[in-house]
Image (spheres, rainbow over the protein chains, first blue to last red):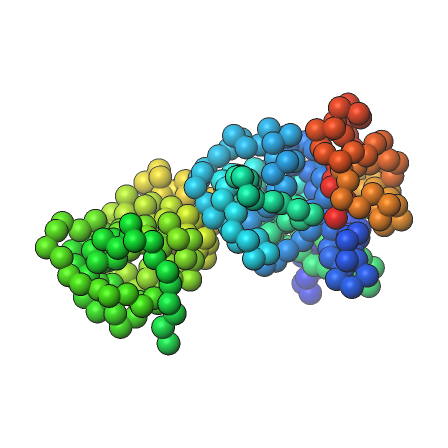
Length: 151
Length: 192
């Protein structure tokens, strides 16, 4: 795993990522496996997103829309479109293939689609609502995402 | 310098209200035309003024940048916990997420014992707590490889993949769960 110069661990876990399917050849992404409410899912790492963002269909099926709801009247611009939705505090696990997995309290945006809204083929996003609570590093040569606790 | 923003007629009274100098946004009001990021005809009024009129109007319009400009100029000296909570909620409604987080941090510092402030600060500017460790899952690599080598054939569909093998695919997640049954140990994903 990865260490600071003084020998302190930087990362305790690592997982392989893929480039996504749509536009993978021209616009590769960092798609990782995470677990939310005991359900493994895939999500795109996005350091430009303020929160974790879930596909609304997925959130409905997992029953997350009422789970740990903190704020219900939120606007978030996602790829140029304003979506209304709610913010939740939910534990999300970064699932390690090597080392140890890590679960962190995360701020999650769940869009609430109204007539006229479309979600399209957007991934789930792992944004700063999780990434601000862990250390992470990306090795694009090996397609590996490393992570560790901040404390 | 100025950006023109179309404001619904029904909100006119709110913008006029912002010229009054009462309330926590006093510094926003007196010289509003000098920094307001939208061009309006601003006139003072003798009516009692809701202090959050300007921010509410911007939140209604989801005018995130204008909201950020307005709240940055506000004098927070006299703000109560309730003022902070209301401003943070309006920022979220406006889509101004960085201002919301910054307000939450300042509110937490000023009012560490206020439950509503702490709840919002915990959401938007969380203090780093201990993360929980658990064993690795060696099937992660096999699942990832399935998406690399087979994902393109299922573009846009929902799939369930367990230990590198496809359990099922469907146009919607609900249909997928009906076909596959228990998906808790499988990765479920729309292929994107």
